[in-house]
Length: 252
Image (cartoon, rainbow, N blue to C red; front, top):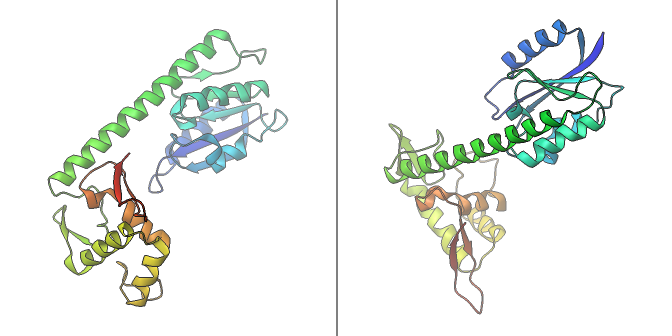
């Protein structure tokens, strides 16, 4: 039998690949392919391709390893149009055919060449996939802002300084005072490690209340960069004060 691989991807850790894997396996076997490799990835397709571990491993495959890679749809491969078309050409140069189940689209012809019309169509699909991802991101951002303005939470876990009740977010004053302290210290020019040391020295409990975990600069940075404290969905950056200039707040 001919050898093939399967590439499975979902966006979040609470999703699973079961349906993708089952149907792609059935499809491969119906075409007389033996599945020799399965790549399972739980990362967003909007990330650059060289940051996705399983995709990186799959890109090491040669024609001797597999003749075809079965994928659920083009959005599983990438939602970045430039990455998508680069991957199509990269595997085409190796004479490895990509088979997208949802559209029954294959990248190589019977002579293992990439057809010009097919490549143009794939490029258009890649562009549309990226546009769709950008539209979804804009909707999520808008929904996040709207929820915050109404006092609702867009997350199941309240950030440090808040608590959740009936899907609304409320200030938890015994924690909120430390959030304010962190921002004040940072605006004065203190670094995240300094703030973490201050919190640890004063035995300020973390949200988890786990006494075996201490404040670190990464935890402080998460607070300073969390947009929920601004009531906005944008990323707000604070530029620390210096001897020559006051603290500044910028929105990206």
